[in-house]
Length: 373
Image (cartoon, rainbow, N blue to C red; front, top):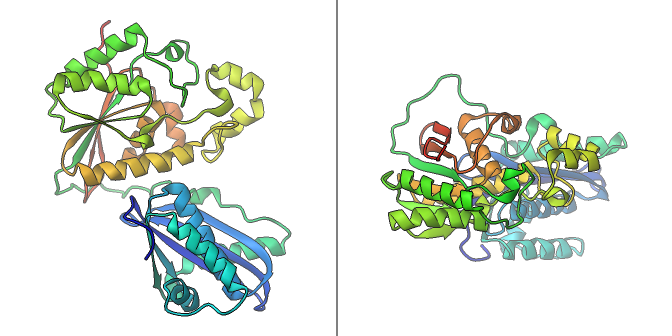
């Protein structure tokens, strides 16, 4: 075990192999949500001529790196079918082979930066996913290609919902989702990501109207994006409810990079190929920005924190277009492309019930009845 108490709990499954030992080698690793089993990331790579043990350590390093990218404070449980790696990383066996020493040191350095890391051995048949990724990487190298994750296995996408709706038996946590009020960029329909643009006078009035609509909603807590347009909106609700406001960085807007402040048409004129790729693939980021897939992962981490802190409570989340749409998408079990088919107005309210033992349930979306005409 290493590190201090951390955040989200994830499982890393890792493996490596060599066809010849030593011979052409590769590794595979994946990160799962420990609660749901959802695959959050997959990585694989051919590493040229190496031994099984080197490939296995490389798989571990790749898995820990992927976990840190999802949540640097994650509590990680590593599962591998390599007894050698597990026992060495657990401190039970000494590391004598010179090829292993720097790899183990690198893995320990990554582990120290996470919330905590534990190691467990599993039989090979329970490590089939990581083994498949490693073999895919070696097969690709044999064809003179690089391994590419299959589109249908997009990390971060939820499993398809069951064919029938199963009624839950628990009291849900309810998120009331409030988009911030109007800003100068929203008026002109420009990309407004992590740039800290303020509310307009009308936007502040919208925030006050939303606050009055929420006064008797029975809120237990208020959480907001760190950006001022959300914090100022949240402050209006806090003023009428008497609740404190907690900032949650995971609910900030996507970083649109070079497109910040531009209209959609301006971005398309300057970066036509990049815009087309961004619309087609959630893993593609705007130049210098952040992909929807990455935003989705941090929004889910932020939601997981809410579920722990506010079990069976009603929480107001003041956020932006992208994080709110992503939460709605997940609640519906919809594909990422559904984001382009939702309209979410400024200061609009939506609400979702999240059940611990059943499906999420979307109750309202884009409700603006409280806003002045």
